[in-house]
Length: 294
Image (cartoon, rainbow, N blue to C red):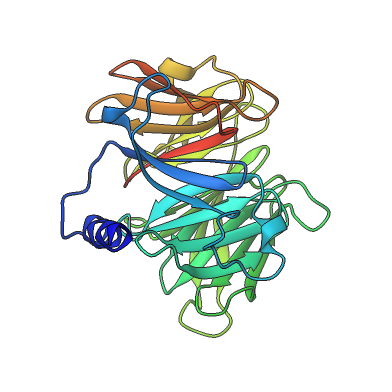
């Protein structure tokens, strides 16, 4: 009975029948992702809303994906926050329905590092350094594991779909690219590269949208703004000297900043927030990224 009640509440929350709590964030690492309520969490005190784990006996993974979905490195809310895109450096990508935890799409993607949802039921994935990686790949949701397009991109780390511009932005080791959709309603879709910008730092890592014209780009030495119209990088003052920021989320209206940075090898146990200031610590999870709802 409790499980049924939880499912009903979760469905209402994530189908827009109830207001979405903007304090809910996704946190991923190891082989799991959790949604926690920031307003009700502080220090080691956590208010957990939802959890998905590759090791949960109720998780029905396709064959081989127990290995592919280890070391999650992306947990992005998509489709009005009703679904979540996961990527893992264990070589996997998945689209999951949040209320039911149903796996809607999956693909074996070498060193998958980030993903975003595209029009027409497709998914873009950035592949980091691997003998079969270093690429930007496109998959169809309705045809798991079917690769429909690929372009080389050294150390692919970030992808963001910009709805207003109808453009896909992709971040690699030393460059940021803009693509337009081509032949998108056919069986042979592709991407046209229309812009390339060299980032003024080394080892591009996270690509995070702020509004229709601005994104944040993290790299080894710090975090930068990228103004699309001006085609210009400038320092993001709050984190201009912060090294190895693995994920960054910024609300320009409230100035709230939420981020993670590598503190133990490539992971951390801490989630940092500014405006208001707080640190959340999860000792039981090797955290890689944190994502806010859109």
